[in-house]
Length: 189
Image (cartoon, rainbow, N blue to C red):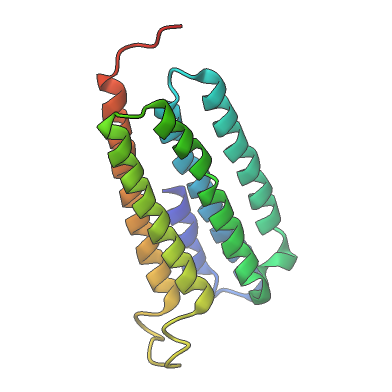
């Protein structure tokens, strides 16, 4: 929700002035980073509930990486359009860093159908986010037909639709992992 609030504020208020525009678009980038960071917490917490070291390692790693990305993205010099590819790469790097804990959870809980289903939804989320980033960076379809997508159907709108769909897929994955944890026996320490 924080990401969507930052994005809504950016789209609403960035047209005020050049100074506001720079501030609010940086706020939008920070919101995207915040969403990526927070999306790691529930699945890692529940998947590694009985493995506190792995849980803390993965949560600490994404937190540190996320803070570094937010600091980088809040830099006014990186808000220029020529850094569009860098911003997309930072978001994708953060998101795809989840491959390591996902693989670890798969090995740790091999044979549990909930984990396979949850990872399927997480894969769908990753594909939706990556596709959205692809539209964002390539500026397709407006690049193909300038002016035709000024009101509806431009890359930024497609990016937002795909991000919301990805967030929904992630929510389902989190509910599946939560259901797995509820049905698992307690941890033996």
